Length: 436
Ligand SMILES: Cc1ncc(COP(=O)(O)O)c(C=O)c1O
Picture: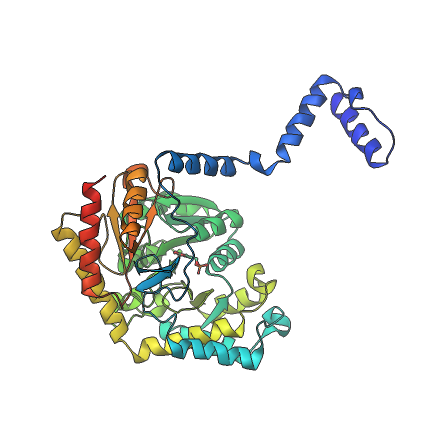
């Protein structure tokens, strides 16, 4: 009997409650046993150990964790944390619709009518009228055949990309693409290649070299990148995808409700026909004051996902009280375009004032998300802490989320931020930089 067979016999004997002695395992198998014991401990996971190092580092530098702060009410332009009011730049409540009483009322009425759970996958018995109302409204705004909503924005990308594509396919994505698209691409088993940020010429080169080796090709970009607050040249990406016979997917998590004259996203910004993009993806959790994700596109895509994508088919339908406020928010977006205009004006003001003060805002275009590059993770964490002490809540983005020299604070603007709040924030930021 070789060593592993001895080990297996020992385990089997133990399972049968037969007496056995650990000493019957030879030294090498004992080492295996130690390894296996270690592998059964959660504190031995690399990710957990990394967290411990970061937390100890924070303690050493006197920086308290900025994460998991508890917001005690509605988080919009302001928020309340531990009984204190803060100017808030850490929420994606761009249009201040989360907290709007009409949106909240829609959720309450949906609960009264449908209860708190649809209690099944939509395919079986989870379908409610609000689902199709919301999907039809989204499809109409995109000018495409249909849409499907799913219970999580992250899961929408994972299941859509993971289900539609396979090992014979190629997925090309912007280097700064969101984790949900990366995980979807990994799940699909397709070959995955990143191209430099917003660089459609580099994408074109990759396609020229690679297209012929694969059956289907998917290009994934975002409407507005949340780390940098910049956006792609969508018409150029459409030209490239048409030329090379590829699918184009645009994740509008941060651009829908934010870009375009009436907030209809990057499509409206560039005056592009909805059918020019194959897969429109968006989230309900930001401008639309809800939770979940959507895919919009042609009927064959939507029907297919609804009947076969595992994350939709084998998951519960969206609760009515989540669909209803998103639908109400979509209606208000159209009825009150002044929200979008205010958001765009406040964002542009923030960026221009930041430039005037010499703040490095990286690639930020002044649309809802503005980065302030601090140049080091410790610097970003200290700035965030200093601003918090002055009543301003803004999150740092640290390595490894971005390269160490690109560590930053990220300001998410709300249409309800006042110019005075923005001025006070930038003054506080400059003061804090002096004390670093
Ligand atoms: C670009 C992008 N896609 C997808 C998601 C996932 O959306 P959700 O948080 O609604 O699950 C996010 C989340 O912030 C995102 O930024």
